[in-house]
Image 1: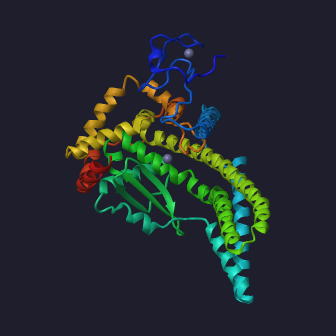
Image 2 (image 1 turned 180 degrees about the horizontal axis):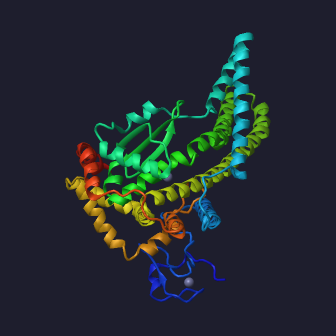
Image 3 (image 1 turned 90 degrees about the vertical axis):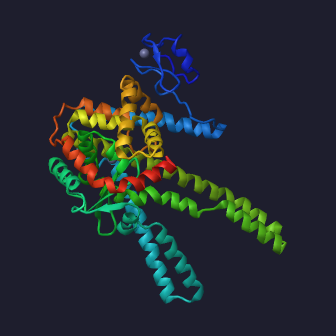
Length: 440
Ligand SMILES: [Zn+2]
Ligand SMILES: [Zn+2]
């Protein structure tokens, strides 16, 4: 079988045929060409900027493995009814590591408190140190208040149409309503469960919502609400200690810092002969432990990313259930080239246009890429390949929706209802426009 090639250039599209199926090669944005028909060379590793030898090696590994992981997860799920993510062996492994981390850190904190209370001065200091380290490993639940300070919370009285839509979509997908709904100026949206009291927060980026056609808004909200049903917020909280513990531990081990302080100690005391053997003995050990910890960090996060991709597919499935397959697909296609859309909206914002102008610009861009949609979807598999990717490549998400049985919309948003939502959010437009004009 012909091996993928990153040596090809966009110009070869004219002269080279696919070595596997003899079709003409294709390219997008002058990327290394691939075969649209059999996807030969789609997985070619093509870094966007020139990299040094080591970085290149790491990036290539990340790309190749990430590509394989995302396509294999797709293969594993396609054609089946997408289930609410359950306890896979991998997820169980994360939970087990989390449990061990929690037991160790609670034990360390308890020992620390005991030392501080019951032992003399020097041991008190050790106790404080233990408590400090234990705190580093605590699960982080976030703060609702802090989060709401960065966005604009909405009340039902000021946005009845938007709340009404969310209520209808929630009923259609069997999701609870968010406790807090907010908007901000991002080209993104999120739904999370935050704080010790576990409040559900949904935030819709105004540009992200406003540029969508009515039915695509239903899909966006269906997807975000999906994160309240698929349980991944609780799942990720339970897995969180595992996902951060190894990196936190690696940060605590600092061989370079130790060597520096040994060198200083040797210089001031003159005991160089004594210090060098200690350094030679301890430093390699510390480096080895640090590398092992970082490797473990890599491993658990690869598992975490796959679990998160699974949750995204499930949320997409609920989006299709609410908005219908056609709108769920179209809604996904918007982010195929998110950077392109951001550029378009940024330019419109700089020429003092509000949400209606952003929408017009995005519609133009979408018309421009309608012909190339199939290739752009394929290209996302290459561009978004990484073992750390928390979301599946956009193209695979589209494929998953299309491979499922076709669904008609359960919730229909009319043009008039959609316009009512725009009117409710209009008061944020000018402030966000200025923000976007500056930074996009
Ligand atoms: Zn081919
Ligand atoms: Zn999502």
